[in-house]
Amino acid sequence: MPATQSRVLRHVVLFAFKSDAQAAQVDAVVAGFAALPELIPGIQSYECGTNVSPEGLNDGFTHCFTLTFASNEARDAYLEHPEHQRFVGTLGECLERSLVIDYWVS
Image (cartoon, rainbow, N blue to C red; front, top):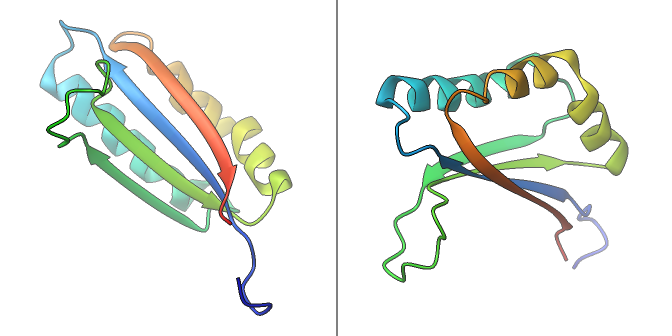
């Protein structure tokens, strides 16, 4: 990596929704997640999408959200931020499980 480029921290979140989750509930979760970059400082970028892999290896996870941070401290502030905590509190009705991994881009 050139010396002028900074390393970035990726925070990847996968969601598997309950089988009885309504489309409106899923849409509300996606919209709620998408709102966080405007509400929480430190998020450098945000992406989301649904699984389109033909491999069938997603183990029930259908939605992927990727956030980029400049530091562990920025990521930690996001995790503790009241808006993030409020969003997490909305997931119980329709979320079956989640998977989160963080990694430094090399």
